[in-house]
Length: 228
Image (tube, rainbow, N blue to C red; front, side, top):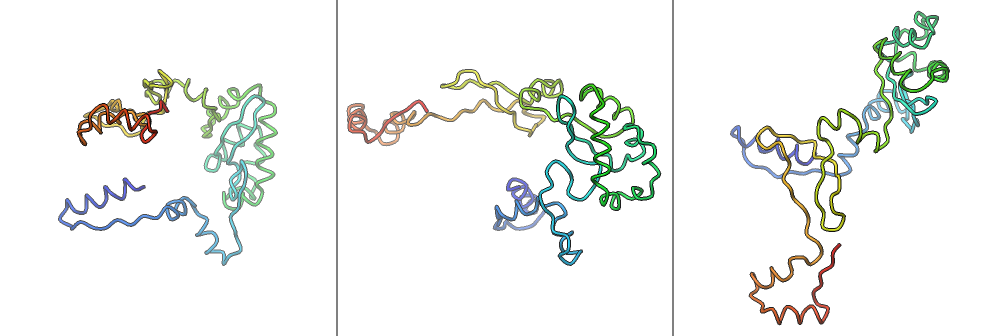
């Protein structure tokens, strides 16, 4: 968010504007992630107070995290109602007037989500459920743990995880930055120094300390270096 703020200010200046002071608040950044909470609260005169909804959407039906026999999955069937009812073998729900409008269907969230869960309980595993849902064009995806994510073909093809050399851990994998540039596709091989790693270099080159004086500082505990 801060970087976007900076880029917007730079673009303003490049297009003939002046430089400006940038003000950004951490609490306002967090507040901006509240999706529709403010609008729902204000437009209903305070009657609708959004709250934690667990794995389900707090307002809409047919959307959320559902349990399969072996794993959990995410389903969003709001705009694919016909396909969803076909996938879960509930054609009787397709033309039910109560569920025609997604906003109205939210009133019957327990019934709709319950029907989805009942169907999932009949599937052998998550991948069988995904195959049926995708065949009916219902957006869905498995909930992956970190090991499954790192082993995912898309993640491997993208190179989303990269290996670096660390002085303490040796070769270790870390998330790759999501920012990609055509002119320098590979991120620079940067690493943080360990505590006090550059003590001698700084004191010798910038303060012109002799080696004996630097060692005296170390022996008296004034400076120290640790491999952390």
